[in-house]
Image 1: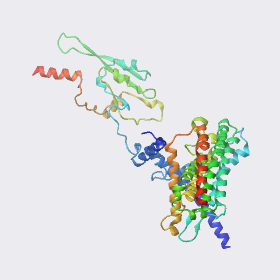
Image 2: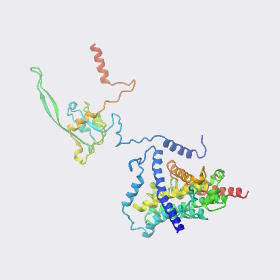
Image 3: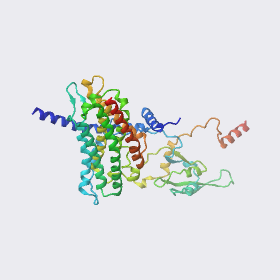
Length: 171
Length: 322
Protein backbone atom coordinates (compact mmCIF):
# COMPACT_ATOMS: atom_id res chain seq x y z
CA UNK A 1 0.00 0.00 0.00
CA UNK A 2 1.46 3.34 -1.04
CA UNK A 3 0.64 6.54 0.75
CA UNK A 4 2.46 9.80 1.35
CA UNK A 5 5.17 9.60 3.98
CA UNK A 6 5.36 5.81 3.97
CA UNK A 7 9.10 5.86 3.38
CA UNK A 8 9.59 8.32 6.21
CA UNK A 9 7.74 6.06 8.64
CA UNK A 10 9.58 3.02 7.37
CA UNK A 11 12.92 4.66 8.11
CA UNK A 12 11.84 5.37 11.67
CA UNK A 13 10.45 1.85 12.12
CA UNK A 14 13.60 0.07 10.94
CA UNK A 15 15.89 2.14 13.14
CA UNK A 16 13.64 1.74 16.17
CA UNK A 17 13.46 -2.00 15.67
CA UNK A 18 17.25 -2.17 15.58
CA UNK A 19 17.40 -0.10 18.75
CA UNK A 20 15.34 -2.65 20.65
CA UNK A 21 17.36 -5.65 19.46
CA UNK A 22 20.76 -6.78 20.62
CA UNK A 23 23.57 -5.47 18.48
CA UNK A 24 25.58 -7.86 16.31
CA UNK A 25 28.97 -6.45 17.27
CA UNK A 26 31.69 -9.01 18.07
CA UNK A 27 33.55 -7.81 21.15
CA UNK A 28 36.83 -9.07 19.77
CA UNK A 29 39.67 -8.35 22.19
CA UNK A 30 37.43 -9.26 25.14
CA UNK A 31 35.74 -12.24 23.50
CA UNK A 32 37.57 -14.57 21.11
CA UNK A 33 35.79 -14.83 17.76
CA UNK A 34 34.09 -18.10 16.80
CA UNK A 35 35.46 -18.73 13.30
CA UNK A 36 34.27 -21.40 10.84
CA UNK A 37 36.73 -24.27 10.05
CA UNK A 38 37.78 -22.95 6.63
CA UNK A 39 38.56 -19.38 7.74
CA UNK A 40 41.71 -18.11 6.04
CA UNK A 41 43.79 -17.33 9.08
CA UNK A 42 47.16 -18.97 8.58
CA UNK A 43 48.44 -21.80 6.36
CA UNK A 44 49.60 -24.94 8.18
CA UNK A 45 52.00 -27.49 6.71
CA UNK A 46 51.65 -31.26 7.14
CA UNK A 47 55.32 -31.94 6.43
CA UNK A 48 55.01 -35.72 5.92
CA UNK A 49 52.55 -35.25 3.06
CA UNK A 50 54.80 -32.89 1.14
CA UNK A 51 56.70 -34.35 -1.86
CA UNK A 52 58.49 -31.10 -2.72
CA UNK A 53 56.66 -31.08 -6.03
CA UNK A 54 56.89 -27.25 -6.05
CA UNK A 55 53.34 -26.85 -7.43
CA UNK A 56 52.40 -24.45 -4.62
CA UNK A 57 55.55 -22.39 -4.99
CA UNK A 58 55.03 -22.06 -8.73
CA UNK A 59 51.30 -21.30 -8.58
CA UNK A 60 51.67 -18.71 -5.83
CA UNK A 61 50.72 -15.34 -7.43
CA UNK A 62 52.82 -13.35 -4.98
CA UNK A 63 55.82 -15.71 -4.86
CA UNK A 64 55.78 -15.98 -1.10
CA UNK A 65 56.68 -19.69 -0.82
CA UNK A 66 60.30 -20.83 -0.79
CA UNK A 67 61.01 -24.56 -1.02
CA UNK A 68 64.33 -26.40 -0.93
CA UNK A 69 64.77 -30.19 -0.73
CA UNK A 70 67.18 -32.99 -1.37
CA UNK A 71 66.82 -36.56 -2.55
CA UNK A 72 67.37 -39.52 -0.26
CA UNK A 73 67.78 -43.03 -1.46
CA UNK A 74 65.81 -45.80 0.25
CA UNK A 75 67.62 -49.12 -0.25
CA UNK A 76 65.69 -51.87 -1.88
CA UNK A 77 63.70 -53.95 0.60
CA UNK A 78 64.25 -57.21 -1.23
CA UNK A 79 67.39 -58.75 -2.65
CA UNK A 80 68.04 -57.59 -6.22
CA UNK A 81 65.21 -55.01 -5.99
CA UNK A 82 65.44 -51.48 -7.23
CA UNK A 83 66.45 -48.66 -4.84
CA UNK A 84 63.77 -46.07 -4.25
CA UNK A 85 64.35 -42.36 -3.87
CA UNK A 86 62.23 -39.78 -2.11
CA UNK A 87 62.35 -36.04 -1.66
CA UNK A 88 63.00 -34.66 1.81
CA UNK A 89 62.21 -31.07 2.67
CA UNK A 90 65.10 -28.87 3.76
CA UNK A 91 63.27 -25.62 3.71
CA UNK A 92 59.61 -24.61 3.41
CA UNK A 93 59.00 -20.91 4.13
CA UNK A 94 55.86 -18.85 3.67
CA UNK A 95 56.40 -15.10 3.81
CA UNK A 96 53.15 -13.77 5.28
CA UNK A 97 54.22 -10.21 4.65
CA UNK A 98 53.48 -10.75 0.96
CA UNK A 99 50.98 -13.63 1.09
CA UNK A 100 47.57 -12.51 -0.16
CA UNK A 101 45.58 -15.38 1.33
CA UNK A 102 44.23 -16.44 -2.08
CA UNK A 103 44.23 -20.15 -1.08
CA UNK A 104 45.65 -21.25 -4.46
CA UNK A 105 48.55 -23.17 -2.86
CA UNK A 106 46.13 -25.13 -0.72
CA UNK A 107 43.88 -25.98 -3.64
CA UNK A 108 46.76 -26.95 -5.90
CA UNK A 109 48.50 -29.25 -3.40
CA UNK A 110 47.93 -32.84 -4.66
CA UNK A 111 48.67 -34.53 -1.32
CA UNK A 112 46.87 -32.30 1.20
CA UNK A 113 50.07 -31.05 2.78
CA UNK A 114 48.70 -27.52 3.22
CA UNK A 115 45.65 -26.61 5.32
CA UNK A 116 43.87 -23.46 6.45
CA UNK A 117 43.85 -22.74 10.17
CA UNK A 118 41.57 -20.02 11.59
CA UNK A 119 44.35 -18.63 13.81
CA UNK A 120 44.94 -15.02 12.82
CA UNK A 121 46.82 -13.38 15.70
CA UNK A 122 50.45 -13.66 14.56
CA UNK A 123 51.38 -10.01 14.03
CA UNK A 124 55.06 -9.18 14.51
CA UNK A 125 57.11 -6.11 15.32
CA UNK A 126 59.56 -6.87 12.52
CA UNK A 127 58.64 -7.61 8.92
CA UNK A 128 61.24 -10.39 8.70
CA UNK A 129 59.56 -12.31 11.50
CA UNK A 130 56.49 -12.74 9.31
CA UNK A 131 58.36 -15.41 7.34
CA UNK A 132 57.28 -18.66 8.97
CA UNK A 133 59.66 -21.57 8.50
CA UNK A 134 58.87 -25.25 8.24
CA UNK A 135 58.81 -25.83 11.99
CA UNK A 136 56.51 -22.93 12.69
CA UNK A 137 54.19 -23.92 9.84
CA UNK A 138 54.12 -27.43 11.33
CA UNK A 139 52.95 -26.09 14.71
CA UNK A 140 49.94 -24.48 13.04
CA UNK A 141 48.71 -27.99 12.17
CA UNK A 142 47.61 -28.36 15.81
CA UNK A 143 45.12 -25.55 15.30
CA UNK A 144 43.54 -26.91 12.11
CA UNK A 145 39.95 -27.86 13.00
CA UNK A 146 38.21 -30.96 11.58
CA UNK A 147 36.30 -30.22 8.37
CA UNK A 148 32.69 -29.19 8.53
CA UNK A 149 30.16 -32.04 8.64
CA UNK A 150 28.57 -32.87 5.29
CA UNK A 151 25.05 -31.72 4.59
CA UNK A 152 22.38 -34.39 4.84
CA UNK A 153 22.25 -36.37 1.58
CA UNK A 154 25.47 -34.87 0.23
CA UNK A 155 27.95 -36.94 -1.76
CA UNK A 156 30.84 -37.85 0.47
CA UNK A 157 33.50 -37.74 -2.27
CA UNK A 158 34.96 -40.12 -4.81
CA UNK A 159 37.83 -41.33 -2.65
CA UNK A 160 35.63 -42.49 0.19
CA UNK A 161 33.19 -44.09 -2.24
CA UNK A 162 36.03 -46.06 -3.81
CA UNK A 163 37.34 -47.06 -0.40
CA UNK A 164 33.98 -48.36 0.75
CA UNK A 165 33.48 -50.25 -2.51
CA UNK A 166 36.86 -51.98 -2.09
CA UNK A 167 35.95 -52.91 1.51
CA UNK A 168 32.70 -54.50 0.31
CA UNK A 169 34.57 -56.39 -2.41
CA UNK A 170 37.02 -57.77 0.18
CA UNK A 171 34.17 -59.11 2.28
CA UNK B 1 24.06 41.72 47.92
CA UNK B 2 21.46 38.95 47.94
CA UNK B 3 20.36 39.98 44.46
CA UNK B 4 23.90 39.80 43.14
CA UNK B 5 24.38 36.36 44.68
CA UNK B 6 21.11 35.21 43.14
CA UNK B 7 22.15 36.42 39.69
CA UNK B 8 25.58 34.81 40.07
CA UNK B 9 24.06 31.50 41.13
CA UNK B 10 21.68 31.52 38.17
CA UNK B 11 24.53 32.27 35.76
CA UNK B 12 26.58 29.42 37.23
CA UNK B 13 23.62 27.05 36.91
CA UNK B 14 23.11 28.00 33.26
CA UNK B 15 26.82 27.58 32.60
CA UNK B 16 26.73 24.17 34.28
CA UNK B 17 23.76 23.14 32.15
CA UNK B 18 25.54 24.50 29.08
CA UNK B 19 28.58 22.36 29.77
CA UNK B 20 26.78 19.12 30.70
CA UNK B 21 23.51 18.88 28.73
CA UNK B 22 25.17 18.99 25.26
CA UNK B 23 27.59 16.28 26.37
CA UNK B 24 24.69 14.13 27.57
CA UNK B 25 22.97 14.60 24.21
CA UNK B 26 26.25 13.76 22.49
CA UNK B 27 26.63 10.57 24.49
CA UNK B 28 23.00 9.69 23.77
CA UNK B 29 23.73 10.20 20.08
CA UNK B 30 26.80 7.93 20.28
CA UNK B 31 24.89 5.10 21.91
CA UNK B 32 21.41 5.47 20.38
CA UNK B 33 22.78 5.87 16.88
CA UNK B 34 25.07 2.88 17.36
CA UNK B 35 22.27 0.61 18.52
CA UNK B 36 19.97 1.82 15.75
CA UNK B 37 22.67 0.62 13.36
CA UNK B 38 23.12 -2.68 15.26
CA UNK B 39 26.45 -1.56 16.70
CA UNK B 40 27.36 -0.89 20.35
CA UNK B 41 29.17 2.44 20.03
CA UNK B 42 31.98 3.47 22.39
CA UNK B 43 32.67 0.79 25.00
CA UNK B 44 36.18 1.36 26.32
CA UNK B 45 36.54 4.95 27.56
CA UNK B 46 35.68 5.21 31.25
CA UNK B 47 35.10 1.49 31.65
CA UNK B 48 31.30 1.30 31.80
CA UNK B 49 29.82 1.39 28.27
CA UNK B 50 32.17 4.18 27.21
CA UNK B 51 30.55 6.84 29.37
CA UNK B 52 33.69 9.00 29.28
CA UNK B 53 34.08 8.96 25.50
CA UNK B 54 33.28 12.65 25.07
CA UNK B 55 35.61 13.61 27.93
CA UNK B 56 38.36 11.67 26.17
CA UNK B 57 37.49 13.42 22.90
CA UNK B 58 37.70 16.76 24.66
CA UNK B 59 41.16 15.96 26.05
CA UNK B 60 42.26 14.91 22.58
CA UNK B 61 40.97 18.16 21.04
CA UNK B 62 42.81 20.27 23.62
CA UNK B 63 46.11 18.63 22.74
CA UNK B 64 45.85 19.45 19.05
CA UNK B 65 47.70 22.25 17.35
CA UNK B 66 45.67 25.33 16.48
CA UNK B 67 46.21 26.03 12.79
CA UNK B 68 45.11 29.08 10.81
CA UNK B 69 45.48 28.70 7.04
CA UNK B 70 47.55 31.39 5.25
CA UNK B 71 44.70 32.15 2.87
CA UNK B 72 42.21 32.59 5.72
CA UNK B 73 40.81 35.92 6.86
CA UNK B 74 42.57 35.58 10.18
CA UNK B 75 40.28 37.46 12.55
CA UNK B 76 37.03 36.21 11.05
CA UNK B 77 38.39 32.65 11.02
CA UNK B 78 39.44 32.77 14.65
CA UNK B 79 36.29 34.50 15.87
CA UNK B 80 33.87 32.16 14.07
CA UNK B 81 33.80 29.29 16.64
CA UNK B 82 33.03 31.71 19.45
CA UNK B 83 30.27 33.35 17.39
CA UNK B 84 28.82 29.89 16.81
CA UNK B 85 28.99 28.80 20.45
CA UNK B 86 28.22 31.81 22.66
CA UNK B 87 24.73 32.60 21.28
CA UNK B 88 23.47 29.21 22.46
CA UNK B 89 24.80 29.94 25.94
CA UNK B 90 22.95 33.25 25.83
CA UNK B 91 19.81 31.53 24.55
CA UNK B 92 19.91 29.02 27.38
CA UNK B 93 19.88 31.90 29.81
CA UNK B 94 16.29 32.69 28.83
CA UNK B 95 14.84 29.18 28.58
CA UNK B 96 12.79 28.27 31.66
CA UNK B 97 13.04 24.80 33.19
CA UNK B 98 9.90 25.18 35.32
CA UNK B 99 9.03 25.17 39.03
CA UNK B 100 11.78 23.81 41.27
CA UNK B 101 10.35 22.18 44.44
CA UNK B 102 8.00 25.13 44.90
CA UNK B 103 10.92 27.60 44.86
CA UNK B 104 9.74 29.52 41.80
CA UNK B 105 10.74 29.01 38.20
CA UNK B 106 14.20 27.69 37.37
CA UNK B 107 15.43 30.13 34.71
CA UNK B 108 18.50 32.24 34.05
CA UNK B 109 16.60 35.44 33.49
CA UNK B 110 12.86 35.82 32.90
CA UNK B 111 12.48 38.19 29.93
CA UNK B 112 9.23 39.72 28.71
CA UNK B 113 10.53 39.26 25.18
CA UNK B 114 11.97 35.81 25.91
CA UNK B 115 10.81 34.12 22.70
CA UNK B 116 12.08 37.00 20.56
CA UNK B 117 15.40 36.97 22.42
CA UNK B 118 15.99 33.22 22.07
CA UNK B 119 15.09 33.12 18.38
CA UNK B 120 17.40 36.08 17.71
CA UNK B 121 20.25 34.39 19.58
CA UNK B 122 19.74 31.15 17.66
CA UNK B 123 20.03 33.01 14.35
CA UNK B 124 23.29 34.61 15.45
CA UNK B 125 24.65 31.14 16.17
CA UNK B 126 24.26 30.18 12.53
CA UNK B 127 26.32 33.24 11.56
CA UNK B 128 29.33 31.56 13.18
CA UNK B 129 29.26 28.75 10.59
CA UNK B 130 28.75 31.33 7.85
CA UNK B 131 31.81 33.26 9.07
CA UNK B 132 33.84 30.05 9.15
CA UNK B 133 32.77 29.31 5.57
CA UNK B 134 33.62 32.71 4.16
CA UNK B 135 36.74 33.28 6.27
CA UNK B 136 38.57 29.98 5.71
CA UNK B 137 39.99 30.84 2.31
CA UNK B 138 38.96 27.40 1.04
CA UNK B 139 36.60 26.71 -1.84
CA UNK B 140 34.81 23.85 -0.09
CA UNK B 141 34.29 26.05 2.92
CA UNK B 142 33.06 28.84 0.68
CA UNK B 143 30.46 26.69 -1.06
CA UNK B 144 29.43 25.36 2.34
CA UNK B 145 29.11 28.91 3.61
CA UNK B 146 26.88 29.80 0.67
CA UNK B 147 24.70 26.82 1.46
CA UNK B 148 24.51 27.89 5.09
CA UNK B 149 23.39 31.33 3.96
CA UNK B 150 20.71 29.88 1.67
CA UNK B 151 19.48 27.57 4.41
CA UNK B 152 19.41 30.37 6.98
CA UNK B 153 17.35 32.57 4.64
CA UNK B 154 14.90 29.76 3.86
CA UNK B 155 14.26 28.34 7.28
CA UNK B 156 14.25 31.45 9.44
CA UNK B 157 10.84 32.42 8.08
CA UNK B 158 8.85 29.24 8.78
CA UNK B 159 10.50 28.91 12.18
CA UNK B 160 9.54 32.42 13.26
CA UNK B 161 6.03 32.02 11.84
CA UNK B 162 5.49 28.77 13.74
CA UNK B 163 6.76 30.37 16.95
CA UNK B 164 4.57 33.43 16.32
CA UNK B 165 1.53 31.19 16.10
CA UNK B 166 2.08 29.93 19.65
CA UNK B 167 2.88 33.40 20.93
CA UNK B 168 -0.38 34.63 19.44
CA UNK B 169 -2.36 31.81 21.01
CA UNK B 170 -0.81 32.52 24.41
CA UNK B 171 -0.96 36.29 23.99
CA UNK B 172 2.57 36.81 25.31
CA UNK B 173 6.21 36.63 24.19
CA UNK B 174 7.43 35.58 27.62
CA UNK B 175 8.49 31.92 27.54
CA UNK B 176 7.17 31.31 31.05
CA UNK B 177 3.90 32.98 30.05
CA UNK B 178 3.57 30.78 26.96
CA UNK B 179 4.24 27.57 28.86
CA UNK B 180 1.76 28.61 31.59
CA UNK B 181 -0.92 29.41 29.01
CA UNK B 182 -0.42 26.06 27.27
CA UNK B 183 -3.37 23.69 27.21
CA UNK B 184 -3.34 20.05 26.13
CA UNK B 185 -5.63 20.62 23.11
CA UNK B 186 -2.92 22.85 21.66
CA UNK B 187 -1.05 19.66 20.85
CA UNK B 188 -3.63 19.16 18.13
CA UNK B 189 -4.35 22.76 17.18
CA UNK B 190 -0.64 23.63 16.99
CA UNK B 191 0.52 20.32 15.50
CA UNK B 192 1.46 21.75 12.07
CA UNK B 193 3.31 24.54 13.87
CA UNK B 194 5.14 21.98 16.01
CA UNK B 195 6.25 20.03 12.95
CA UNK B 196 7.30 23.17 11.06
CA UNK B 197 9.20 24.50 14.08
CA UNK B 198 11.02 21.21 14.69
CA UNK B 199 11.96 20.65 11.05
CA UNK B 200 13.04 24.26 10.55
CA UNK B 201 15.06 24.05 13.76
CA UNK B 202 16.83 20.93 12.47
CA UNK B 203 17.67 22.79 9.28
CA UNK B 204 18.87 25.82 11.21
CA UNK B 205 21.27 23.61 13.20
CA UNK B 206 22.43 21.97 9.95
CA UNK B 207 21.69 18.60 11.48
CA UNK B 208 21.12 15.63 9.19
CA UNK B 209 19.02 15.27 7.06
CA UNK B 210 19.60 19.00 6.50
CA UNK B 211 23.40 18.93 6.61
CA UNK B 212 23.88 19.89 2.97
CA UNK B 213 26.31 22.66 4.05
CA UNK B 214 28.58 20.07 5.69
CA UNK B 215 27.89 17.24 3.19
CA UNK B 216 31.10 15.30 3.77
CA UNK B 217 30.73 13.42 0.49
CA UNK B 218 30.74 16.63 -1.54
CA UNK B 219 32.36 19.39 0.51
CA UNK B 220 34.82 17.60 2.81
CA UNK B 221 33.30 19.22 5.93
CA UNK B 222 31.86 22.43 4.45
CA UNK B 223 32.58 25.51 6.56
CA UNK B 224 34.40 23.41 9.16
CA UNK B 225 36.94 21.99 6.69
CA UNK B 226 39.89 24.10 7.86
CA UNK B 227 39.14 23.87 11.57
CA UNK B 228 40.91 21.55 13.96
CA UNK B 229 41.57 21.11 17.64
CA UNK B 230 39.76 23.32 20.10
CA UNK B 231 38.08 25.46 17.45
CA UNK B 232 36.54 22.41 15.84
CA UNK B 233 35.49 21.19 19.28
CA UNK B 234 33.73 24.51 19.85
CA UNK B 235 31.77 24.07 16.63
CA UNK B 236 30.82 20.55 17.73
CA UNK B 237 29.77 21.78 21.15
CA UNK B 238 27.75 24.53 19.45
CA UNK B 239 25.93 21.87 17.42
CA UNK B 240 24.92 19.92 20.52
CA UNK B 241 24.14 23.04 22.52
CA UNK B 242 21.95 23.99 19.57
CA UNK B 243 20.10 20.68 19.88
CA UNK B 244 19.49 21.37 23.57
CA UNK B 245 18.24 24.90 22.84
CA UNK B 246 16.00 23.67 20.03
CA UNK B 247 14.63 20.85 22.20
CA UNK B 248 14.10 23.30 25.07
CA UNK B 249 12.24 25.76 22.86
CA UNK B 250 10.10 23.04 21.30
CA UNK B 251 9.27 21.78 24.77
CA UNK B 252 8.37 25.17 26.19
CA UNK B 253 6.43 26.40 23.15
CA UNK B 254 4.61 23.31 21.94
CA UNK B 255 4.76 20.58 24.58
CA UNK B 256 3.67 22.63 27.57
CA UNK B 257 7.09 22.89 29.21
CA UNK B 258 6.67 21.66 32.76
CA UNK B 259 3.03 20.53 32.38
CA UNK B 260 2.66 17.15 34.08
CA UNK B 261 1.79 15.52 37.40
CA UNK B 262 3.20 17.36 40.50
CA UNK B 263 4.51 20.10 38.24
CA UNK B 264 4.69 22.48 41.23
CA UNK B 265 7.63 20.50 42.57
CA UNK B 266 8.89 18.36 39.70
CA UNK B 267 8.24 20.78 36.82
CA UNK B 268 11.95 21.06 36.05
CA UNK B 269 12.24 17.27 35.76
CA UNK B 270 9.31 17.18 33.35
CA UNK B 271 10.95 19.85 31.20
CA UNK B 272 14.27 18.00 31.19
CA UNK B 273 12.51 14.75 30.32
CA UNK B 274 10.72 16.38 27.39
CA UNK B 275 13.97 18.00 26.26
CA UNK B 276 15.62 14.57 26.31
CA UNK B 277 12.72 13.17 24.29
CA UNK B 278 12.94 15.86 21.62
CA UNK B 279 16.74 15.47 21.49
CA UNK B 280 16.21 11.77 20.89
CA UNK B 281 13.95 12.67 17.95
CA UNK B 282 16.74 14.85 16.55
CA UNK B 283 19.14 11.89 16.74
CA UNK B 284 16.54 9.51 15.36
CA UNK B 285 16.01 11.75 12.34
CA UNK B 286 19.75 11.69 11.71
CA UNK B 287 19.91 7.91 11.67
CA UNK B 288 16.72 7.30 9.73
CA UNK B 289 16.94 9.78 6.87
CA UNK B 290 19.44 10.40 4.08
CA UNK B 291 20.71 13.91 3.40
CA UNK B 292 18.49 16.20 1.33
CA UNK B 293 19.94 17.58 -1.88
CA UNK B 294 20.56 21.33 -1.88
CA UNK B 295 17.56 22.13 -4.11
CA UNK B 296 15.34 19.82 -2.07
CA UNK B 297 16.36 21.64 1.09
CA UNK B 298 15.16 24.97 -0.27
CA UNK B 299 12.11 23.52 -1.99
CA UNK B 300 10.99 21.97 1.30
CA UNK B 301 11.25 25.31 3.04
CA UNK B 302 9.45 27.47 0.49
CA UNK B 303 6.92 25.02 -0.95
CA UNK B 304 5.95 23.08 2.17
CA UNK B 305 6.99 24.67 5.44
CA UNK B 306 6.19 28.32 4.69
CA UNK B 307 2.65 27.61 3.41
CA UNK B 308 2.10 25.23 6.32
CA UNK B 309 3.30 27.85 8.80
CA UNK B 310 1.10 30.53 7.21
CA UNK B 311 -1.91 28.20 7.41
CA UNK B 312 -1.07 27.55 11.08
CA UNK B 313 -0.90 31.29 11.80
CA UNK B 314 -4.25 31.78 10.08
CA UNK B 315 -5.81 28.94 12.07
CA UNK B 316 -4.46 30.34 15.34
CA UNK B 317 -5.74 33.80 14.46
CA UNK B 318 -9.23 32.41 13.84
CA UNK B 319 -9.13 30.44 17.11
CA UNK B 320 -7.91 33.44 19.11
CA UNK B 321 -10.42 35.92 17.66
CA UNK B 322 -13.25 33.42 17.96
